[in-house]
Image 1 (cartoon, helix red, strand yellow):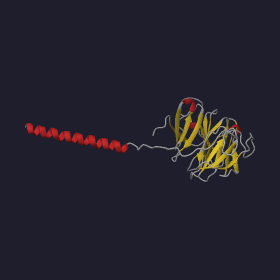
Image 2 (cartoon, one colour; image 1 turned 90 degrees about the horizontal axis):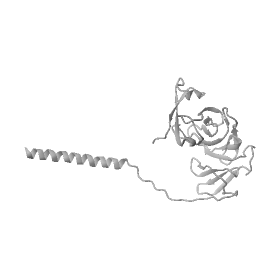
Image 3 (cartoon, helix red, strand yellow; image 1 turned 45 degrees about the vertical axis):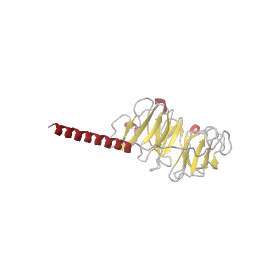
Image 4 (cartoon, helix red, strand yellow; image 1 turned 180 degrees about the vertical axis):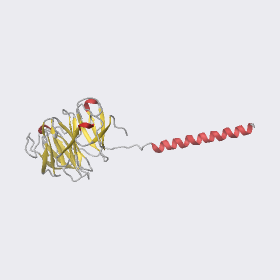
Length: 255
């Protein structure tokens, strides 16, 4: 009988040890490999010459990654570089102006799949659209609180699948959505700390699933929004939308 107990004990111990080893191996396989980044290059210095900056707030590569676009805030221009920092071209006269293709403190920039460049022209309260080489295409926006208007235009991003454009307004406490030609689609947000409300929304981006990520700066959080088509609006927040839809909100982005 004692021999049987010993055999059973050894068998159980072997199973426990096997399970522990298998679990450890599984955890090891699930852990992502450590990513290491090394310095590649740099460019730029203070000034107003080609390749110099005075308050750049954003940087974005073209879809292929071969060109880089930078809004040069206090130099009132956009500069284009190759991916290794070689200066290519700039547009904007360098002085505050509301003329087409000119800027008054350009803040953010993004590029669509066709290479068109969208710029949040902050103090002109408008978005401007250009070709990859800076040829003016169109513009939209005026100062105000209505649809398609801005008070403190800040971040801008382009949906990679649809080409729709999203922009944050830190003083109107909202996000506005437009098509690629500037036609207003919808907006959401109000001042506050509740879900779907903002305090100084600044940076914005959209993923391939059309989820919109907003840096809600004054509330010290990230908010994520997803669009779901429904027949009726079920919350006061969703009721602000022009189309029949509901916004699902997570206050914090979770992987």
